Amino acid sequence: MIRSKVVLLSTLTAFAAIALAAAPPAGKPAESSKPANPPAQHAGAPANPGFEMLKKLAGTWTGAGGEMGDVTVTYKVISAGSTVMETIMPGTDHEMVTMYHMDGNDLVLTHYCALGNQPHMKAEALKREAGQPATLKFTCVGGSNMKSEKDMHMHSAEFTFVDDDHLQSTWGLLSDGKEVEHAKFDMHRKK
Image (cartoon, rainbow, N blue to C red; front, top):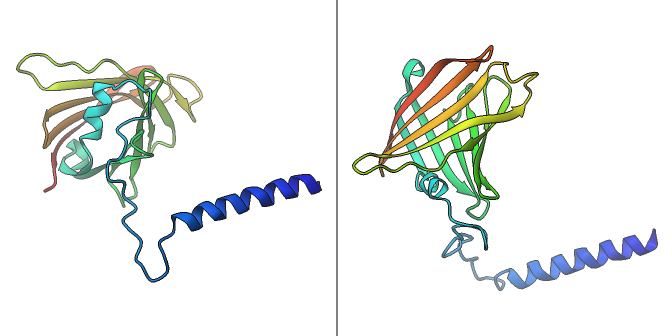
């Protein structure tokens, strides 16, 4: 018991020393906490073209969301460049978050849905055909808060990167084992 308290105290002391060493001198303002060159990916991780396209979406997007009317979607690169956070309809009662990241060599997402479940999807390879916009398609591979794979959930997502300022996406809703509805978004980067 005493030994574990000594280890804990030593660890806290080490963290305090590191924090003090990183702190600016008294009277001098702290420099920006934003790194000059944030890492694009973790060391040793292979670059994934689809994930790199998602990172380029960072910012605020607005446009038509089909039956949902006008919508706002934000994208933010977080966790030292290892995750992209998408927020659909931020600040509303139907706000939803989707997290995109690499799992080994696979690009995956988890969608935190207003339905109360969290489908997990895996991406196919980014498709680029001459003269056509790049497309990225995800398909559900499982999830949480679903009793079976036939429960209602978002089952697919497809992104069409029209250009740097124009994005189209389609989310497929599955119910009773069949895709029954598609939510389509036609978004432009807010300037």
